[in-house]
Length: 159
Image (cartoon, rainbow, N blue to C red):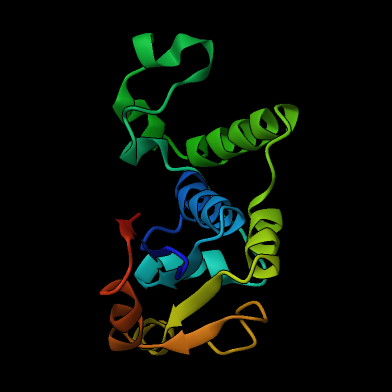
């Protein structure tokens, strides 16, 4: 029997959006799925050698805030200069205290589990990335390359 296939499209480049594609991909691979993740537009940030991801509380009003800030602190207040850095620091600290793997660790786990990670060549060209900017062990290709796999997948997710 052929293994199940999972296709994931990663389009976002913030810390909070980095986790879903890597967690889903590594879990599916551990369960025996053949997995491909296509990183396009801002999702390409997740493949950079030097990961400098931030949380954007302004764009995510559903994000739980420390000290129940979501109950009394106006969402617009998250646009105050420096708030993004503060929220990122707090999120990273909380994740570390809970023993959650870093994005770099999850990427390595995916590579070790033979998850095929594809950098969208059009996006690489659009944002003037070079292969030296991105991690080793990934593939480069266009939407048609990924769609050939995704069209035959059992599960296709957009993150």
